[in-house]
Length: 386
Ligand code: ATP
Ligand code: MG
Image (tube, rainbow, N blue to C red; front, side, top):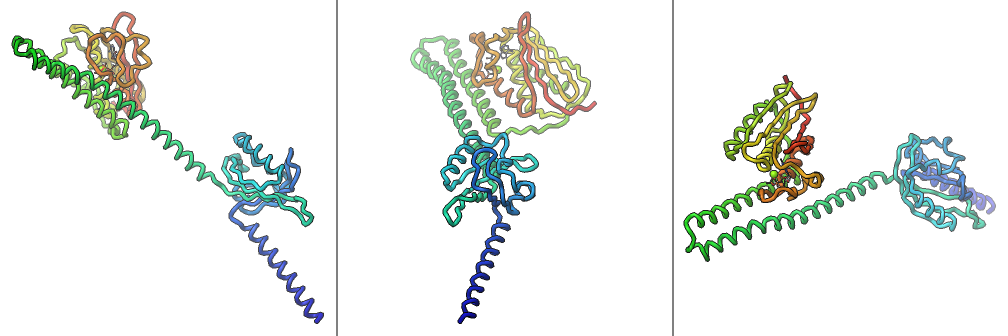
């Protein structure tokens, strides 16, 4: 009988020991980091660490002997959220189990996010003796959250920009549409009593306005493509001086410009590596402004030069010039200077030029000329060959 009793006691003890061993190996080998500290002091220097498992060492880079006897505050750093730590301290003071997300620091100083579950452990008499902290790294989740937030923010900004763009565009289309309608109505009601020349003039007005609207549509489509990321630079080698000579000749032929043109090359390299189409977009808009905002017969000069890694185009006209108050908004959509008077335009040319320049990593700068006219400088980063 007696031996039966001791047999079962022995069995119980053996079971307890096996259970204890099992639990210990769970704690030691768990995938989550486990830290056990004394229950107090909660104020500085904080409770001492009495145990850390293998996962803690993998996560933080510390060895057990480097942290035992220290406090978990060694894991905190300048970017750890003070407010979160205060909230943590308040729950600890009330012996409340707590779940918290914190930014911690590894031994090598790198930051990582953890989600930590803290529970107080009491002894047989009901006194709290230790805290057990189970921590899981959440850096990847945090990074994904931040990226998602950034994408959402960008989407929101884009959609605001789009609706702003749509309302501005519809407003800009209304004016020429009204002009076309008025001209057509005038022709309908009074045309019979007009001379042939007056009738032709009204028809020409309609044609010019339709042409302007088509140009505006093309510009808007191009801007849309640039904003949607559809315009990608496709650089190639070419001779920029020959390219500019040809562009100016085409420009003169197409638009019948009566200005005095000069293309000057001070290039030290014969060829550059650039996207010709984007360069054409930029220069065409700048040339068109130089022509539009200066009188027939005045001089327009396009000068090419370079410095290591950059090619520069400087366009100078003798026109109406720019007013200082317009400088900050020149690249805004539909923005037109205060001094344009009746010179036609939609205020899209420079917005397009700027987007094309940005795509190539280029720069643009306007200069007010001391006498009269405007000077605009554009620069593109480029490989160069002799
Ligand atoms: P669009 O080019 O769409 O037909 P726009 O010429 O008015 O219209 P931008 O080319 O974007 O529009 O130019 C914006 C404004 O900058 C112009 O309205 C004008 O006030 C000013 N500007 C640009 N270039 C010159 C220039 N060479 N001389 C004087 N003003 C200029
Ligand atoms: Mg323009």
